[in-house]
Image (cartoon, rainbow over all chains, first blue to last red; front, top):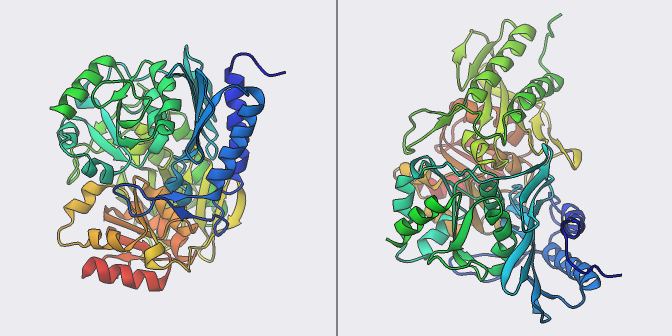
Length: 263
Length: 263
């Protein structure tokens, strides 16, 4: 019998299915059929058959349990109409997946009436999972399972700033990213969804990404928000539709960051 | 009784000691006493008490087993005089260590008469280890233990290029890194020593780092070379002294890369 309300157990079920499928191909050369999708500012944007097969598998599990829910995924677009919409990216960070760098993740989010209410990021190689049930945010992995909080006390001059690709920064005209860099403690690159999860877990203080799709951010919004963080678009609106997205460890820091970036 | 010749078992013993000490503090906020060392091009170069304590522990184990050997480490410099020199970095990538991004590693290398002959990179959070006994290179972790090879077949236009920080690229005057980027398939950032290990394992094809210390690269040289890769300074010499260092998946690719960077 289908469940009536999605719960955290179901997020783990989806993540476990994706984990099995992606790990089978991770660090295995020559078996991935790499294609390239066009993407602004990048010469090559990879998609693999693992991305597609994993999304199909997740769609089947969701369809079985919640046949009335809508689904949006990276590889197969949007289907169904419902106040409940699952928003999934089977492999967020196909590039680090191909490079063997364990900062990619399986992203599973759930929106209700347009607002992200539950979400999970699962990194199969490390075994780390980060999720929110809509009340609290959690991490589990080799160090056990525990609630996570952003670093509320971080001042701008002590803040660790992250963005995945310098190429994306250069694309976004009129932004003041370098002014933000000058004020923060240090800048890291290349962390993909794992960096957003680490913001929720209190180890990174500011994440700026200039060209996200909805499935890149919806699953992370509840994880960040229920850990005490703030995530909005660059102009301060809800981030569910993606675009230029900023996440910060606290409300105070977030206001400063938006002021600088929009200054 | 001290061993007469260092072996792989001893590398694992050192890595296990470092693993225990570093994991105790990884992902734990507020317990790390962060200091900053000056470093060209960066406003902040962190060192933690975990770095220092772990190096001291490794020095003690080496000193007990090989009292006549010399040691060079990131935190306590060079000590002893011997044709055998251990070259260690307890936490290569203190920045990703602080950010919770699992691309830092414990690096343990051994030089004989100035040449790197054995080495290991251990990533405690993922449980991955990459090493060479001076004959073959190996990886172990959640996917088992297996010999690794670089991607010998990679042509330049298919190559995945990595460098840790765009800031370092900008520092090195007169280099043609952007010309190399234009010819390669894609560029990744932020991978630290884990990216060099993934070059040895066949998932990244070119690594360029502009300002390495000996302890950043000596432990990785045997792992890359005995996996079929090539690693030299930008001017083509041995890389044991660090500086601007280039690693490539094959001899042919390496020649092309050096030509472009020096062109």
